Amino acid sequence: LSSYISYTDSSFTVNDTVYRQRYSYTEAQVIKNSWSQQNNYIMIGKGRIHGIEPDMAVISPDGIVGVVMSVSDNFATVMPVLHSDSRNSVKVKATGISGSLVWDGKDYRHAQVIDVPATHPLQEGDTIVTSGLANDFPEGIPVGYVVKAEAMSGSGFYKVQIRLATDFNKLSHVYVINNRFRDVQERLMAETEVVNN
Image (cartoon, rainbow, N blue to C red):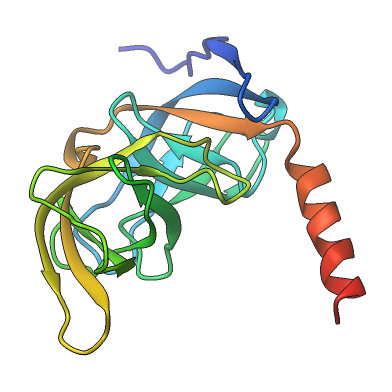
């Protein structure tokens, strides 16, 4: 049994020709993970010296995981989608209709998608992916698959239950995503809000 922490330099870059955004991905080992609480957290074995910063998106080989919250030199904590404060912009892959991913704290295998207009068809098995509308996750990362969708009477929206693409009970490795244009995007939005207020 070794008492050394092993660091791999597994990282790669993806050029998104549609949006001309450049994302780099850094692999990290999951050190601690909870999935049965109302507010869960994950600790990963890479931190500031590896280029990890707060607000970076985190995915697994299967799909969405969460967002980096805090970093030290060698470690970082992640707020997974299994957290009462987590909210992520997602869409129905087949139709492009957007909604918000939330978690009701009941089952680590399932989450909910809210604010999906009932004006578009939604069926069991439909794939939910990241929308790309926020500055963290690239578009098209798997989120989950529709288990049940029912139109809420009088609201005009669906209540959607999904099975998450990522199995948080088996999570051992993740990829931290650096959106190289994030600072520019956020600065531009802040300037726009100041002008319009």
